[in-house]
Length: 470
Image 1 (cartoon, helix red, strand yellow):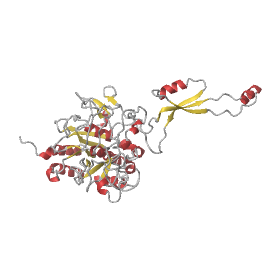
Image 2 (cartoon, helix red, strand yellow):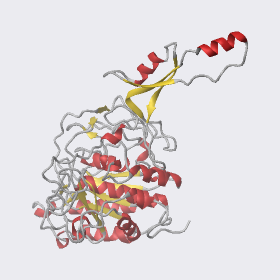
Image 3 (cartoon, one colour):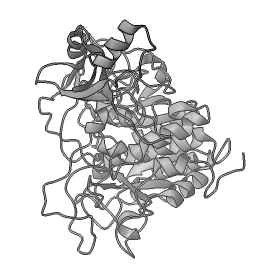
Image 4 (cartoon, rainbow, N blue to C red):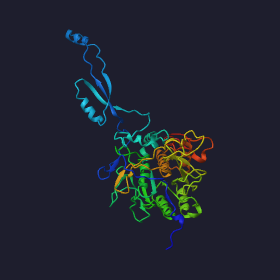
């Protein structure tokens, strides 16, 4: 057999670099088995991990003792004295409260609970801090200054009876997903069995699309990782059904024909949104991959939204398949709200989303400071090394691969919210995402940022562009 044409093997992951450093937080799949995800209506309250509040009962004043001896009515009791107690390193809130509550003069001792803006939902996932709500320390991309407004979006969809995008099916065409325990493979401990629907492995040929790389698990975690389960981090559309479709091998490469078959499988098996965190090399055009272009057109005609990564060469041209006219093309932004230095941009860019990394050099853009240290990476639970049995929160994940699933998840939340009606078309969803995006850059920067930074909170809120009356 002749080897495939160069463009067949030119496709690669749109993640820039993975160091796979030893994570500061690890999850052992054999110990932390996945459990059912509770609804987000009443998440456990978050509190400060390094202090508690103590109320000390004051001694009865002399006037009270005299009044008691004389048999007269008791005066107004003195107020409890309140003190915020800082905890020494290594002392937990629970142990401090147990000790303090044994004090004879302690009226009460409680954690110093954390409030949040009204209308937002704050899950209890601990991240690396081991305290409820600690996910926010890492997931700036969800809840930071230049995040996508996840807590407000969660509240919006919960109010419609579809928490986390429940009822929507999202296909992840990638290196597979750590979705099941089978042979040497383990389900990621921050996934649950019931959140997956049947997928397929188009690389090995078979019904078991287990991940052999970690990239697909990371992407799927950003979209639909279990949330409010006291483990790991959060997923933006945690209530969706994930469809694992393996089209890339263990090295993160796959042929256009294989990806086209994956697209058709997803369409025929009920996917409403397809995520493509992958790109072909610069120079590959639509005429080089006609079978994939036709599959993408077919998905659009069948009412399936396809989201693709714009690519990581820093070029003023969008890579295929994101450059196809029926695909929502996603560039990457940093923690500072600047276009990432590696992100492709240019005509045809639809929108941007958090991808992490260093700022691009864009004179005149107030958010871009390339001379400063790079912004943080994107974090999710995936392989902590090369083994498909060990999971953690590895560093080094940045790229348009990481940006695309933010848009995919937001689209799923929009569908679930019903804000566009029961069966919105891909064009309607795209228009809603663009109309509600947060503008970045300066005048004339649409080629750099598209419509702006995806805003899950605004996209799922009642009313606004394209919304149907309720």
